[in-house]
Amino acid sequence: MTVTDLVEQLAAHKTVGGAPRTELEWLAAHGTIRQLEKNEILTRADKNISVEGLYVLLSGRIAIYVDRGSGTNKVMEWNAGDVTGFLPYSRMSSPPGDTVAQESSTALLVKREHFPEMIRECPEVTAILVHKMLDRAREFKSKDLHDERLISLGKLSAGIAHELNNPASAIERSAALLDQRLQETEQAARALGAARLTDAQLAAVDALRSCCMNTRVHGVLSPIQQAEREDSISDWLDDHHLPADIATPLAETAVTIEALDQFAEAVDGPPLEVVLRWAAAGASVHALASEVQEAAMRISGLVLSIKGFTHMDQATVAEPVDLPVGLSNTVDVLKSKAKKKSVSIAVNVEPNLPKVLGFIGELNQVWANLIDNALDAVGQGGHIDITAGREGKRAVVHIVDNGTGIAPEIQQHMYEPFFTTKPVGQGTGQGLHIVRSLVIHNEGDINVQSRPGRTDFSVSLPIADGPDAGAKA
Image (tube, rainbow, N blue to C red):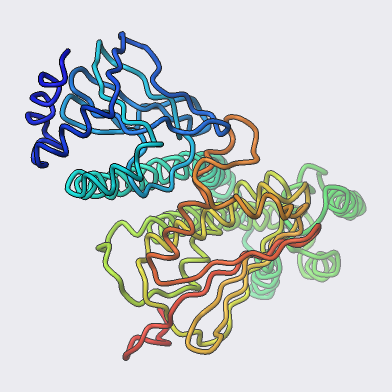
């Protein structure tokens, strides 16, 4: 290809074709033609090498593949008429991924060493390339944020599924037992009706039933304590010549030995067994119905937390944001991961904390990434403290963990894209980079202080002005 032919191709190029011919001639004179075969790698992801220079794609198609921690994925593609590689004034030092030819392609390479002269001699080409660089940065940022949200959603979905499965299983189990207990209650009620008790005895029955319905023992006593309680009730039944099979259902209620003694003084003989069975069955039905209600409320609460975390029903515009609600919703959706490691999370918010002005969905993403990182940093049985309070005209959230800490040399790089200390497949290297970008977008600041046993990420945000400031949700 002659220089004249190359200049003609550049003049027809979608990106640089509008530049003066003298500048296109400069590119042709200082550039080198690169021919790429299909699947040939133009640049490799390697922090130890620099991007060679500017590539003006004349024909074909190339793409960049980046490893987000779970394998390489295509994040951007360029066709004939596009430019890629190192652009003027770019801060990119090394390739973020592998750039691979998707088909036979031809590119003009202008090496980085020529850039100072290109900036002087080709001002219009330089301006075009700077605009392209800004567009590329926005596109990369958009894709990174989208990918990070999908990754976060994938992490959270497993925990949410587990959290929802527990109350759903409780409802299924309680509903199955409820049918059986209702049959027992009906039989006991018929037997009670046939016992023909006096008014005084019926009053004693009501007292016994009230005692059984008091605060439930189940869930408070340990298995050993529960077994001891059953043994105690079995002994009482044996002393009164009653069947031992009543012991277990009675032990599930709140009835006391003293209450049984008082009832036995008012009702004796065959009616005693009838009433005890009826009271135990009724208390069991009540307890199972309460379990179904509690499980359903837990599911409803989780759904509200998820809705609040994702903020599905709100537009992405800056608005007064209630920090306690966002922090609480985020902790709820990450609770399953905390339980797996027996990690305790404490949330303390200053009373009447004013609302901050920001994008609620973005702030929830910030809390999710920082708390998730804290959960990764602490060991089994660790602890995380989340506090929020007012400092001057700003609200500050501190997320503190008692993990191993972050070394000073790592702190210098932890906000850089694709930097991660996590094993392959567990970290994308994008989390803190995106966190800082989102905090800046919300006119906030993020800082970290870390030493072994204490890492404190603090996020400072502007307090919202106007009547909504300080209002509670």
